[in-house]
Length: 142
Image (tube, rainbow, N blue to C red; front, side):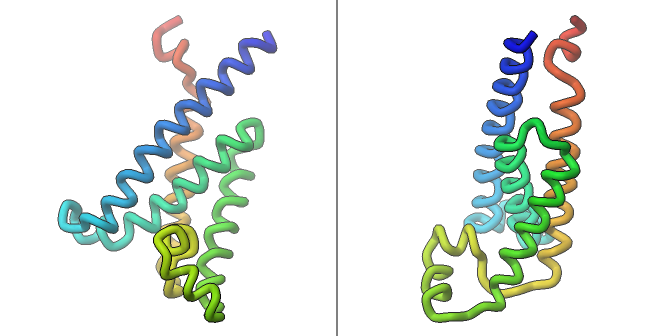
């Protein structure tokens, strides 16, 4: 029985990894190739997918924690990062000018990002619920 639980956790983590890779690709595309997306998605998709990415990463780490708790932690992290954009010391501004700094920390505080983060985290909750409530064995009719 313990082996079954470990295998299920491994499959879930692997599934989350695949979704993370897709999320990163689509998120970067919204920033680097915005002309490929409707303007609304090009404008807000990156921030929404950023929050989804962190939800999925957190879910991979805390696979046994309740989904709602991972959601609260992730949303709080996203809002904290957004609020950190109000801090404009020279060292962090230089860090935000690098590609990794820009991707992790962003730049320019926007209240609208809070809504994007909420949508991304809710999307993550839906994905987690679907994948964790309906394992592959059930989907195959076993």
